View 1 (cartoon, rainbow, N blue to C red):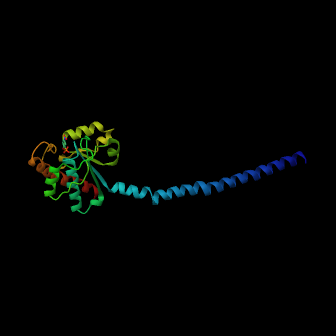
View 2: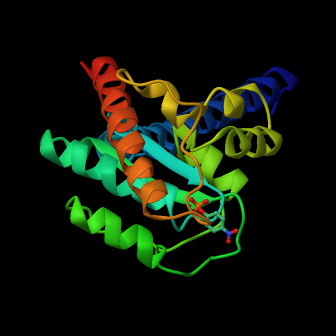
View 3: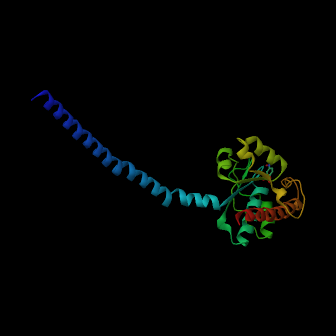
Length: 216
Ligand code: 4NP
């Protein structure tokens, strides 16, 4: 073989090889890369993110917080659940309650609070739990303290401006009465429990009006 023929032979081999490599890359890209991307994209659009994001944007997540989570916040949860149910929009809300202390974690609501609530048609079914900063700040849009002390304690637990913006005082939502928070009824008599329910019904209605205005 002459030198020229050897060069021609090498160039031909290299050309075929590069075409093969190119073809192999084309096959690889079509089968693996494109398909995989489409598969992932498709999955996200049809099964995963779209439905999740839709629910995420539609549902309002509200957490009521007091000290022990056995009197005011479980009542706020029941009263607010009653309001959303009455308006036929319970499926648009996630409602929960917690306490800044864990003193009564695992307990049902205070028997006196349950009795007063039942007289107005509210069943207090929630079990006391301690507020969990990382999980609750991530999971809820509105974190509503019953009094100024609850709000201060929540603010101390906030990790930044995003968390702080979620914290509110319950009575600030009332459109009918002015009160600096829902007073702790634990060491008082019947009137304290009735006052809790009066304030929660007023503020709960205002909260509902505000949240549904934003939903429309
Ligand atoms: P809550 O009431 O914060 O409305 O659940 C209280 C319940 C228990 C205590 C204080 C307040 N405690 O001191 O045990």
